[in-house]
Length: 103
Image (cartoon, rainbow, N blue to C red):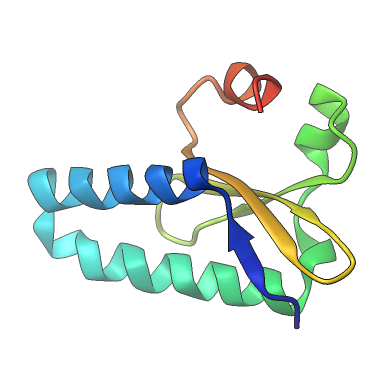
């Protein structure tokens, strides 16, 4: 297992998602957090299982994407020798290429 190290923007993405659910669908907050933590656990155990689609699309070497089950969010990360760098946690309907190009 490799520890996950979320960037400040990734933490803010998660905080924004939780705030949205708390406001619009409070009954989904706990489920979202549980699914996010489960996804983080899967990434930590097997970082290479994430999709390299965006790495190819955006020419960002090593970038991987992992879906959050039951929610329209994608975790974007880079695997390093001793840690996994969580770059962003974005809603699938955002302009993902534009956001990630600026990272």
